[in-house]
Image: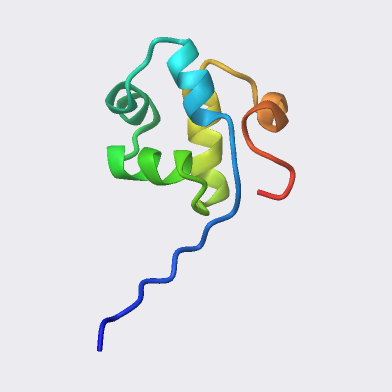
Length: 76
């Protein structure tokens, strides 16, 4: 029997769009945010993440915390 991995998908966000608009790689965003590239990849795919992770990403994209709705949907 094959094990099924359940992914906690939350929804879409604009992390990838904003990052690419800044001509920033996943590795660069991860370095600036103090996160792993795997974490950035998961967030960009809409996986759930902690509030602290969202905060680090927002600030590392050069935005203010008040811009959170531009990056993450209200459901996040």
